[in-house]
Image 1 (cartoon, one colour):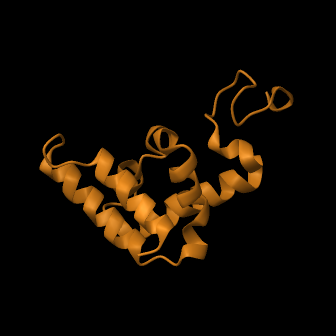
Image 2 (tube, helix red, strand yellow):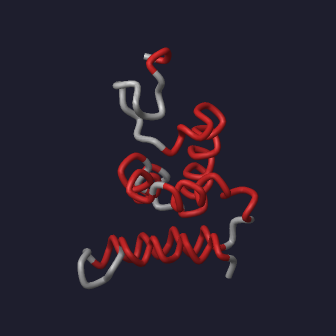
Length: 114
């Protein structure tokens, strides 16, 4: 397991403990992380970078479970969308992509963007 995949797994384990969340949510998170493990590093590098730099932001603004629900519990489709979300966000905002999407000029959006 690569260090970035290990970091993603650690973040998932931190947020998904079977003792603190419903079993269905835990199982859904397991589906996501199993699918993510088979995605090439190059396809998920922006997502992994977001997990490393701002794990709270990943959960708040791109909750993997919401992607899974939207994709009718197709983990492969959800992972593809999630990785694409972070790839596009990074392409649009550069390093500011890992800041909250707020309209105060201090997040991903600059004052000129508002």
